[in-house]
Length: 211
Image (tube, rainbow, N blue to C red; front, top):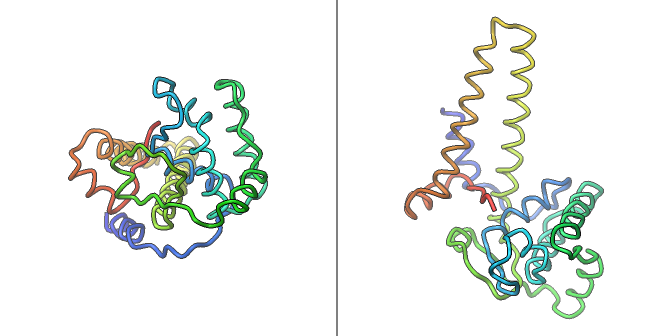
């Protein structure tokens, strides 16, 4: 419990200096932060993910977030390719070319981009402009994703040990309960608790939206 507390405090007061992140978790963090917002340039009756494919504001925000915080390496390009394929198949509209959109924006708009802050995001805003998460919000999303993956890897490792050595299988079960309870508490804070409790939860760790 003490280690958990130290980590949460570290997340809350992390160094938010901008360092380009590599790998597919970086665009996933951009995706996660923008999932808090609804962009109003698509039909409201469409499913949320279809709207994210068809929204020019959302796509531009997503690409600019990647350009601001991520290295556009092979894993990041692969992530974008997967999203574009899904959009093409299910929304009838593939995502635009990344480099063309970024170059067009920088030519006509420069670096003048509105910021989405965590306090505003947790109100699930409806937006009519291009935004990117501010650096602290992005870092919290990226850190939470990486930490969650680390938990899953640790859990898998413990389960393999438990299968190999039945006498310590109980340890794996206890870790499984811990991870499940931790995930349940975060989802509850985000989706079920009062705004005050949700705000208190967001101080120590990012609550991931499910949309």
